[in-house]
Structure formats: C-alpha cells, structure tokens
Amino acid sequence: MKDMLGREIQVNDYIAYALTAGRSACLGIYQVREVSEDKIKAHKLDASYGHGNYIDQTTGIKRKFLDFDYDHTTGKGSWVEKSEEAKQKVLAKTSTLSMPERVFILNNFDPILLKDL
Image (cartoon, rainbow, N blue to C red):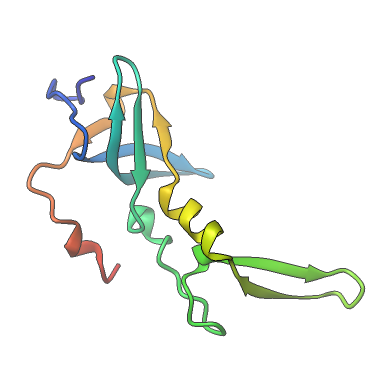
C-alpha cells in the first residue's frame, strides 16, 4: 500500500492519518504494525489529536488506564484503575486503516518528541 505521495508504507513506519472525531477533522498519528494490499493495521500514539495523555487529577493516572465506576444507588461515580491485563489490551490495540489517500508517512519522525504531549 502506498501513501498519498506514492511512497510504499512499511511495518514500523510512523504515519499521519486524516480522520474525524465527532465533527472535528483531526490527524491521528500511528505506528504501522501490518500492511496488506488494501489495509493497514496500526497502533494510534497517545499524542493523536492531543487527548490520549490526559492524567486524571484525583488518581494521577492516565485516563486511558481508568474505568468510570458509577453506583446507581448513590448516584455517584469514581475513576477506578484498570487491571494489568486490561492495560495491556489498551497498549496493544490496533486500528484498521483502509484509505491510502488519507495516509502520509512521517519520515525521520522521533516519537520521543511526543513524550510530554
């Protein structure tokens, strides 16, 4: 599969992929895990459209590692840390991307630049 400029997409490439979140146009940043003739399986990085790294103020844990537990009898809820198994599933999650006209390979991209985003 090739990106919008005709460059061949390879496993471990970092790519930008145009998408929508609600009514907003965004760029997701992914690391490619698999490439087939018409689809890419990729893992979205935390920095994609700026919300993957939110840290919950009450627990100090990244929101993606929390579940919201709501008690219907009291009408109150709280954030609860996911199990280690559930955290690993979050880290291993991949998305299937199928529109090469939305893909742009990020050459010479250093993911360490995103650590504080």
